[in-house]
Image 1 (cartoon, helix red, strand yellow):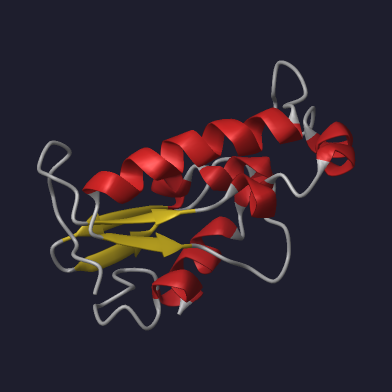
Image 2: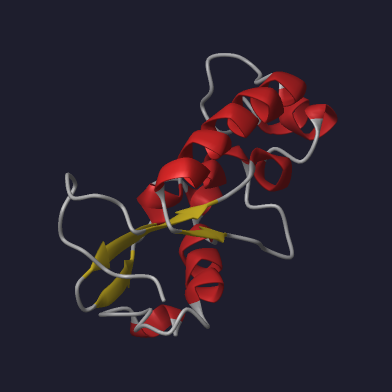
Length: 129
């Protein structure tokens, strides 16, 4: 079960990640969308995968539970920032309203990924239930 917490400094017990393979899709996709998302330049897909592998290996050493966010459709490159779409609390997850229209489906993806973790996954968000 994912534990909702109110601390930004306590040891992390569980975390939700979105792999860049699912958010970035491939280099051609990135070349099509990077400007629409306000990036200064187009990300390098292969480099992102390499860097993420290092990041992920560090997390796996220290965090007991890693939940990988998945989705049927690409959410866009910003979907790797799962912290933006959901705020975990001791009472459950609060799904946020995204500022960028291109990110509007990310809270629902977070909700769907949190289903089955054993905890409440939606507070004060009847529209997304």
